Amino acid sequence: MNFILMNKKRPLADIDLSDSGYIVSINKIIDADAFPVGVITDNNIKNTIGRLNAWWQGRAIPASRDGLNIVLQTYGIETATKLAVRSLGLSLSDQYWIKPASSDIDWQDVNFFTNDFSSDLGDAFFSRGSSKPNINPMTPDASSNGWLKKKWIIMNEERFLAKSGSIPLLQQPYNEVAASKIMEVLGIEHVEYKLIVEDGRPLSLCKNFVITQTEFVPANLIRNILPKSNQDSEYTHFLKCAEKLEIPNVKEHLDKLMIIDFIIENTDRHYGNFGFIRDVETLKFIGPAPIFDSGTSLWCDVLNTEIGIWQKIMPFRATHKEQCKLISSYNINYTALNTCHNIVNTVLSVSPFLDKERVAKITAKVEDRARIMSNIINTKYKKPCK
Image (cartoon, rainbow, N blue to C red; front, side, top):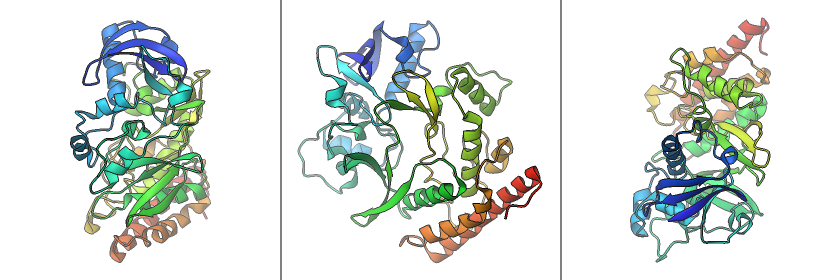
């Protein structure tokens, strides 16, 4: 199958895909500059095909997605990658897509930012059974990542992502809201999350922060633009890559990211859920993306007796106790640190799935974390955090 890889209206490469949806050849590179970041790093076409395939596979729904196998079997779709092909690889995180070489369709006609899209796939993940004989593949849900059930919806002409939690506690949506509110009082740039209930199931809801002129570039693409020296830590290597790309305000943003993740014990801050915004026309980086996807936090996946432990984390160190040593600036409203535990208590107490003991323990441990952060700031600046 012959396609043109596109970045909005800009042709990037002539490529061939196999029947299963894998990129088997790059026939011609048309515009290397506008390629996804980190895909072309040398003149070795074999390496480029490998990196482009990795990027392309990353656009498909991951195998870990709750309910994926059932959905694929129900609709007779072989792989999630084939589902991405059917949706032309379109996304609400960037402007890349694949155009059939024999077609004259335009980005303006098919993009999900300004055109309606199908809710079939998203609904299939959330329904206990589907009566629809076929599925309309034209949806950004075919290119959403992460293991939790989620779906894109349109409200008042704006795009929102609704995301579920994991059984049995369904705590993640509440965590998203709590983290969002904490970042608001601390003055940390973030995506605002709200809680909605659909068929008795809590979902977090957030507005898309990418627009038609921009793209979200995840950190996992940025860290690949340079070979990593054995002498460099993961953190140092990432800073070097970001400097090479001339991304502004990286270190301060990472400081804020590590501060909030420390307070809420976020164990899933991987290289795919933080990153930076790039202008798709000028290809210049604008700055950090607002912090999002903080749901796997607040000890959501441990027993009540384990709440408060230092868990294994990502991306730069093994625990937050160690990772917080990388923080060099504290440009937050630190006087609000003593309100973090109250926010957590208020948000989590609404959940019918969390018992009072669990909420109380989480609240107390967040208070401890905020106090530790206050002491760190107090020591650095020689003044108390009131």
